Length: 619
Image (cartoon, rainbow, N blue to C red):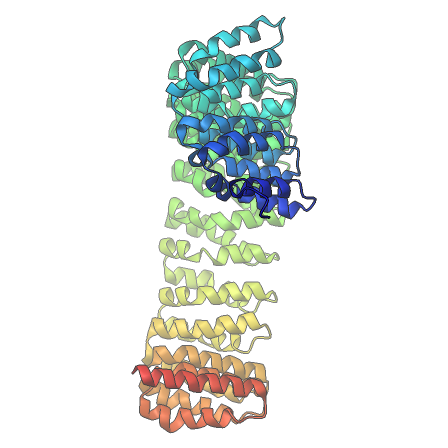
């Protein structure tokens, strides 16, 4: 160790670990690059560390991914923006590897670095790099590629990386280059901008589908940097070529970019260039493309405006709602409410509602579930009369669906309907179905009902709640599933908060305390939990007179689980009651429990006694 020069030691450790057979050691080494760079200093990082990384990039994908991520934030460690160029060679190499996630991370890091670089540094540092590599990248007999060399003298270095990748022999380089154009284009001189647009078009026509997919994915980003005149003349031409690709994977990515392109165009241009494509794609032979259309349709409607939506988009949307593929219907059903917001109620009732009725009895449970998630939002759009006449029967049908998720999705959005039709009609039409669901055989459905009860109670009012739902709340405390009992205990607390201690003392507390004598110890534990939750809401007086005696009496239970839960409940009551009550009632009980034969009971009782002493000292 003493023989190694101290300043050389960090890089020696890095090199040693990077060559280690253990991948974890190599990963740890890469993730410590910033620490090692600080130890080496900026100059040695540029001259030793970065070249080493450039030469040693044939490693496992995990290591390469970590390297690509680290290099993206490495500008401060190489001397700032003036020397940012040294980071590009290793990242350029990583852009050519086969693993997609490594390439994506390398492109992300290149974009981050390129967006920070200063143009005035390009000529001084990177023109030699372009010249030295041009003969290896461009074919001598390809006049177009050779001509690029003379166009690159005034560009950002990231552009040189971009174009070398775009001209790469292996498709991975061309795939990566598509993600760099939006960074390179804004700073390029006019002559090169024309060249960049031409190269991007060539990438969109590449023989490899993977390259065309990448070009389609990044078209929106690139289009956002292109001037308006070229956007309409060239970018939209590229877009139309991608939409006619023979690979459905390319077409669906072109559809995905419709929303981004639509926001860049004027509404009339969007109607002229994008709307016809979407309408045609709604009948595409590939269900994946139709699925993507269904996902993107609302964004397109926002771009083109209400009138084209009503005349052209609605028929396409109706086709998607009635598509043969369930996946397409799922995507289309999820947009029902959003699309209806753009239309007037009459059009929604005339065109969309018949499809909604069909979907409510769809053969696919996932379609019905997707519909149930959004259908309640249609009530405010259609108004009270249409909701009562048209939507309520659909709601009732979905509430009784055999698939639990469908019922859950309806239950969670009942408040939207209440705002439209009023609580009286809601209670008459939907409450019987809700009561039925409260006893559903699927515990997750019962759980959803419990979580909705406080909101429903506040909407229904005290009188209605007492008549219809009060008994259910007590029934859930004796459910066979723990999650239901736990939620029921929390529900009791929330109801006490909603209606006040006086109401709780009359309607909840007596029934809860009565269950403490249940022969099943798990139910008795639930009551103890409910008491601990109710005590802060009920206040000191009711806690001392009604709740505390029940808890102390439960300390005599023969089941150890009950006794150590008594200790925990007593600990929670200490801050609520007076000090005299603690000394007179709680402390003796805890002392007795601290001498119990069961080790867990002794532990929690001792813990509660220590907590009591701390509370007393602080007070």
